[in-house]
Length: 117
Image (cartoon, rainbow, N blue to C red; front, side, top):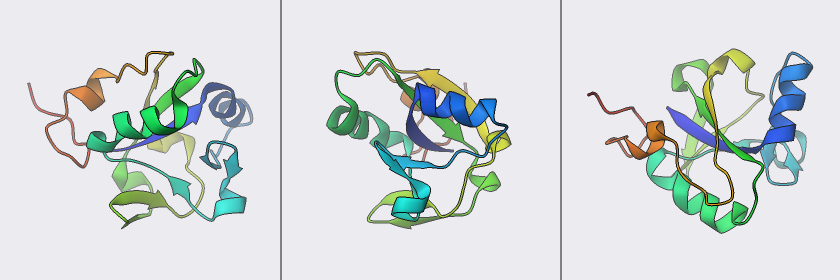
């Protein structure tokens, strides 16, 4: 799994129009940047802290790696194209304390695979 931090309203907008999701990062679209910024599990907390601290409108999109085309650059996954809604397998709100969802916290694989119970 790979993860993308999104603003709740931008995610809802994509869902309401039937997709796809086309936001790259905070304040930037896929068209502007050329790819969608993502993180592996071990990177989500630091990315949230650096760019989203104090916001209460952030959600973590869990994206199935097999459903998108991505490349790792500078250690981070980048999706080159829009994200189909069905590629997003989970959406969890972070809240102002940036609490990581269990799927991210419980991961033992730095690339984001869920740990097995």
